Amino acid sequence: MLVSAKEMLQKAKAGKYAVGQFNINNLEWTKAILLTAQECNSPVILGVSEGAGKYMCGYNTVVGMVNGMLKTLNITVPVALHLDHGSYEGALQAMEDGFSSVMFDGSHYPIDENIEKTKEIIRIATEKGISVEAEVGAIGGEEDGVVGGGEVADPDECKMIADLGVTMLAAGIGNIHGVYPENWTGLNFDVLAKIQEKTGTMPLVLHGGTGIPAEMVKQAITLGVSKVNVNTECQLSFAAATRKYIEAGKDQQGKGFDPRKLLAPGTEAIKETVKEKMELFGSVGKA
Ligand code: 13P
Picture 1 (cartoon, rainbow, N blue to C red):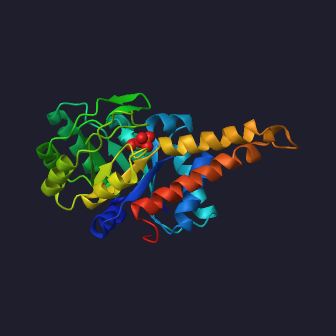
Picture 2 (tube, rainbow, N blue to C red):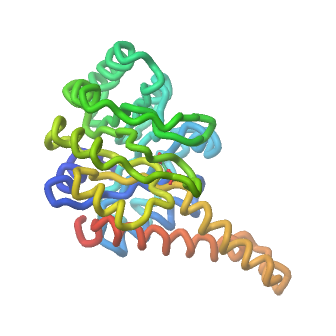
């Protein structure tokens, strides 16, 4: 059964580790992440962007697929199904269709409007036992058409949004989606420390987990980050393994063109990436 992200993140915050949010794109992705979480005895959050939701034929299809796998694969670790960077309408729809967690990304609204909309989402989510992530300070880079300028969050605004009763809070601290440019100056730990000081026990979320050096990730976790989002890195691992298979001509040997064979190396590669991240985040054995 899907669970909200609340309990797993509160435990992570108290235990000074982080739970990974891994974005899914299809059946192979979902299966790879769920099997790895079970093998690592780790809680996990499956992230679905609005674009990926559409690609997978809507939230109902995603909920059906994930619930089916939890049962058939005998997944007993805590699993949350989370809408990533949801619009207001998208978050309402995902809650209606059975997601156990939603992010309402109101960071592009003026702060007052962000607050009003976040309150309404929280009201509905609370009735249904769904966790809510809010964002302050845009995360840089482009994800699924959502482009953020990489603005650093104001700790007072973070406190204001945290006090509305969100479950977890994403704050921009120089992190960006996708691969980091050569001249990236790193995470802003001073701001992160101030945000943590103001928001206390609130689990903080680090977006753009791909390509952040391990030491920086660890330091962010010591400063209150309890959820790290990873998307691009699984895509890169999947693509590299698939390329290798095809370049070796394996799709042309026997029945190597069978999608179950063609997509297998990529699926295994996702598993490896997810395992590596769970080890880095410290969530192994924490289910
Ligand atoms: P990356 O694609 O950079 O790993 O970011 C993922 C993310 O933050 C999803 O919200």
